[in-house]
Image 1 (cartoon, rainbow over the protein chains, first blue to last red):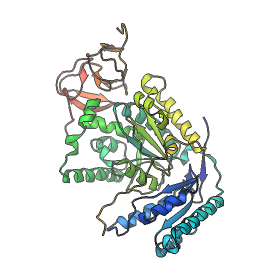
Image 2: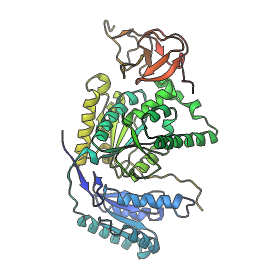
Image 3: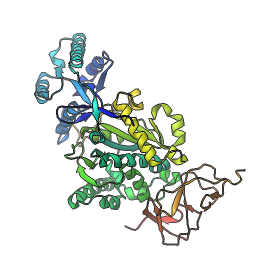
Image 4: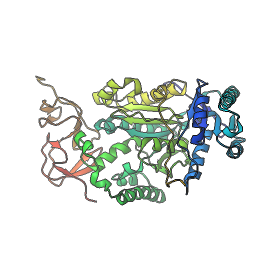
Length: 383
Length: 87
């Protein structure tokens, strides 16, 4: 099997990418960031709906996310673009001594759009040439996997999620890290999670995350247990909520949970973690990437284009028809498990070699199509 | 048509009493372990053995529901004869 390679960062974390990040910290600077990134083929543009005047915990949460993106091990260097000089100074101080090239520019420090774009492109060019990080061989213990599924159908639990789960067991046993999220998918699977969480405090923390979102759901006048599995799920062959939940949980493999993380929180140890996130895929992925994941394994039934721009998002699909129709947007055909052409260990090998190829520079399908967004949940209406 | 051919059924765990049909050919009336009720769609489950009324329905080695009527080996196992587990 081909070797994994990665960029070992000064903080000890390992990236599978060495992105030149062009990050807009407030939507006012998004267009400037777009024009800047358009001038460099290798630039990774990340703009979002980042706002001013957020209330409660929303502004600190937004700052923490932006900070985590610059610090992320897949970021090799970063050009950070913002609106005003005071914000720029604060950001400059925050990123000083990070051990990677970072430059912060404020739009209001410029004198006209054309010169602003010229200056930012020039700054980006300097950051890229200052980089110089080299890939070196790494082990499975350096993987931190975000687990996700979308477009779930009857093949998901049987093929893609099962294959991902088998690979996750292998990574956990090697000392690596994985996280599973989308809390509402665990409604109905409490008993399974409990059995796999020997630490009683940790178990309670996970159950509380699940319970809290179920209560939100009922406060919105809906009963999750009453409407799941959905009519579509039932037409597809799913019979009970437990059966549906098991399918989603299958991608986490079989090892014990060792951590229960709040949205975006970085794990303090290796192993399998639960992260409390909303079910909308781009939000959920953003939380796990903020938490430091360096690769995403994404199980599909029907096609789903979601991905994260900073982190290679590898699509694994068990539905033969979807694979046939979306061959150019799917990385791994797991329908071989259903036809008997491959077993779970064979597919776990395929996942490992796909990640290895990806770590040595091959683009995954989502990267070829430049899919993916950075989103984050907002709790309050802005001022 | 399809003389002697079996519908493909996937059984996840050795302890399961249901399997999932992963085969579009709904006119085939057998799988390698026995009969299959006609017309059961792709992705749906069949019983691998007789399940009594009130018996556990087991998939992934886990009880996923309770039979609400007797289910014969080969019969369609779905919302018409299985209920959610009592909480």
